[in-house]
Length: 81
Image (cartoon, rainbow, N blue to C red):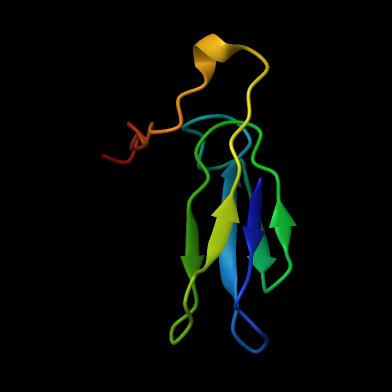
């Protein structure tokens, strides 16, 4: 879950979520402002601020299985490397 803050309108950003990992033809783009919350349940989920804006957010990572809890994991999309 991403919670965006310190981005009062007219400042904004974009949160992009792949519906299927690696499939850039099937994704959802959310416009985000202060107070926007976005759940990214799977796949890659890049985020970007608009020109002149800071892209500020707090994110929370959770998992049901302790084996898959990797809080320091950051991976590039192999289809875009």
